[in-house]
Length: 575
Image (tube, rainbow, N blue to C red; front, top):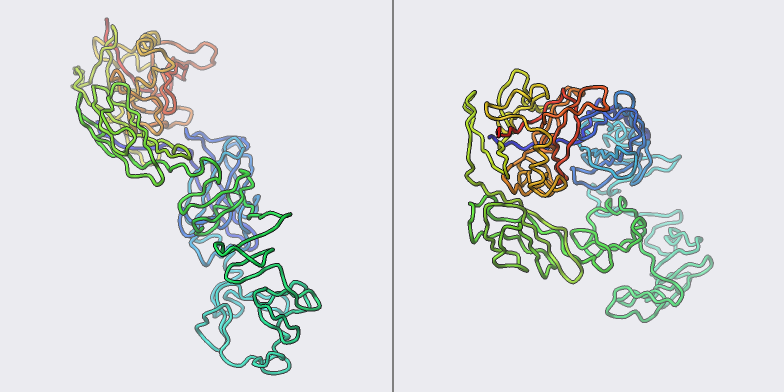
């Protein structure tokens, strides 16, 4: 069957965006949906809006939170720029210096567990905000200039007077004069410094109030210059005249400590190109954090634990009973040991503790995992799914000539593939966005009444009890789902919990059709199989019993579902 990857996630449908005049906002309308595609109706939802600089991984220019309630259609209306600000100032965004990307995050429960919904570039709006404070520098009043009364400001770049190529924030070519004459005369230029303000600093000898010791950064006390507590003789000392020569900064005190900048996580992430070794105090986590040149980590025991290993290389589809298969990862910085685990029926021959191992396989695959370790702690695990293709018995459906793998578990014989017989009421899973169909890869979907009549002669739709017998042979319903699911992520989204395909049932997530949404959903997220049992008790509408396998569980679920839903069929052989 043809293999195609597709992920279904919670979706926003952008209805439109409207211009606004600074320092205002711009409108964002959307329909909020859950990951099954259902509109979230009359529900309190939280949103986090991040405006990013230059690309989808860019620095955060501005961030804000919104708490809104959807209407009867699931519609929400946000005014971007008028939410609860977290990072930056909306009115101070320099729209002209960046390509601006808007990232939307949502918590459908109304809390703070935000998940990324999507991001896109702002192509034309809200650049009216930029046009108000800037624009073409040749236009009267344009450029980066701003007025405050009779004072004129330039808020970006260098200013040149008498030169077209200033090298500093202010470069003057020519003579500068004060009220009383040429600035070459120190006494006349002295009035530039606001010596009337207490705390004015200078490291020059002022001719009007001599300070001879240039190792001190002098301080104006409102009347005269005096020695400050800052001493510089190649190493800077605060509170000491003898800073340790091994330190560029030596702070000495018997009554006060060092106070680091106090930031939230969002404010920390907004720091542009942080230097390795940069330190902050995270007020949300109550920890000192250090940037190591790659990631931020806590300055505590375990903070120097290795990063997650990269992708595991090696044969993902070996032959049954193959030996000497090698799997490896690249070195992880600061790791001193690598711990590997292999599936129960595989043998780790050599390499435990190193970045390369050798495995002997049998007939079943599974997941290889590896973590990196050192004295600080253990990294997150990396995993690789390995599938072993074995030659299974087959049967041919005489109605259309299609061939299906079959397996025997205990006294039962099952089809090991989803049925793909084209009955009048069956349907293919259809991507609601592209219109692409997936019958050849995932089989067809059948409504409950139709499912009774689609199995070939000698085979039948299984009952709930027949599925329970299968589960009991695999250790019970709490773990049977994992043992029935196909290994790997070809037909499942991560993490495909517990998947081992131990009896080669090879359940793949074919999704379902839901008449309430008039569309298909859950492809790669859920396997759903009809049984013959009626599940209508306690419901106003007819229900049938369905077997459910999910991407994040190893359980085999047994649930009543609407008979009008389209689900997969696995036929079982008549006794």
